[in-house]
Length: 367
Image 1 (cartoon, helix red, strand yellow):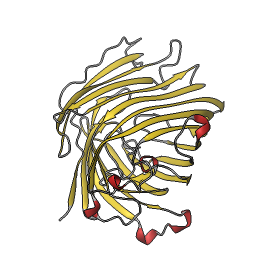
Image 2: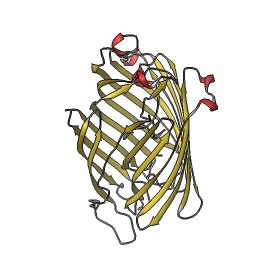
Image 3: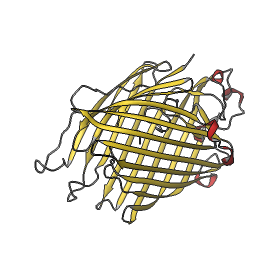
């Protein structure tokens, strides 16, 4: 029997967007605006959950109306099981996009599932556990050439497992990270971004390379290094038809805790890499994924359609990736335009893979 993933976020699909801001003239984009999104979802581990997210966007004073907007998005969610998730994401541009700051602050006490480590962990390994975590991620970049940016980043995370299955793998004490601990790391990043729009790109590309070192000198309880490559390309087939592609590679050396291993899958507010698999269904040191998405927007009025496919896998050794063993998903979705000027959509996606499926409703594109 197929295992269905209940990872659903309902965001007022047919309610008006609550936008505010003052326009300079009828032909220009708003300098600022606010979008308020009620949150409601149900999952077996949480029962009913609700909350609110606020997306505030603005442009630097004196910048062109076509410049990329800065966004600040706080959100809070509370569940019927007395679980809580509170997050703040800030994505800021200034000095005509010469500088870019991306920051995340979050606190979660939320249920999760663990299946073990490796690409072939069986479904009957599934065990429930509840982690409590506080996270901070900050990166700052400077443009060193047209579209080319270099910068530094810092990542801190404190984990505590407040509840585990007494008969599960985590309770046995053999899984690194099973007792929680602190993760602290500093890294470098290099990226090139010439997308025509950050919310709904129709042309251009985005690629980023990061290398982050976690060790005791920075207060970390774990010693490992993470290398990440993210490459995206957007092709405009016509004014309404877009082809989006992404390749993603995560390589980890050293001894990471299970919470920071490469995790195949997707969840609302998560990685957006393999819709249809819950994030962490498969985890190991290394991960490789590819996805392609065809976007048709608009089809009618403010509605659009997409079709997508993805494939990927995890591995303990970088040389042990085999295409014939990759997991795969296919699916489609509906888009509803909530901000024409910014090209911001609400998306509903259905994804199907081998013995798995998932439905996702959230704001913004998967990549």
